[in-house]
Length: 358
Ligand code: BDR
Ligand code: CA
Image (cartoon, rainbow, N blue to C red):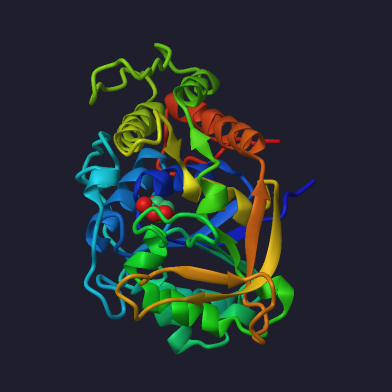
């Protein structure tokens, strides 16, 4: 039976976990990646673009359009976080400079044009600050209705922030954009409301060294990917599989970052969970609520507040993921990326499509 194609338009600030999300999407045969648009966040937007192009080349997918987007947040000055994601955003992984050029279209043009050209067919996935999406909304206010759906990684609700005591990174980089986006979804039908993958559930997608070992096994990569906390910081993978080696080098940096911040030798792969949600392959339960974003107070800027108790009279503008299933999510991510990596080892072509997968 023909599998239904899922059109995904990805906006990312690639970033280690964005990279895992991207590779996971490439590994799914039913996913048609409409384009990737780049926003500044983890690293600046031009570096994000290089990372996306290089990852696509590594995966033999030079057919996917990559476009530059906003290089600065709507009102604030861009902050980046190389200490979290490494000097180029991919941890210890270094990929050859991409041969391919960026699209001539701007990110905003892509969002508006593609969604108008395929009304009701495209699911938007934003794994970075919402700058590009907010700019696209200014140009096409019907974007929420023209999209099939929207999945976001961002925010935290009744849960500590990872950037300030109360704010999550993506929202905190561009709180004004997040505010505009949530405002635009007020009063829309439930099925159109963005599914928000916030820290309280994405931090449960806690990658450990054994997950990297499993990835190597599933890819048939040699030697085994052994990672443990006592190894020297900055050790590199010697995998014979280029994709496994790249992800392993990237993730090792992310594990070390989390350990440095007192979270243990683990890495939260937030964006990979959001990607699995976007294509309907991650188990989760969501609850609708009205979300507001604080943009003014210096103390609370970037804080997201959800009115679960219906204290405000606003209509819900978001579906917030309340529960998820980390074990199922990792099985899905590692199984799918592993099977895909196995095909790359056998020789990538310039258009390497993923294998049939369950
Ligand atoms: C988010 O911030 C970024 O550092 C990650 O890529 C993720 O999208 C988590 O707060
Ligand atoms: Ca991200």
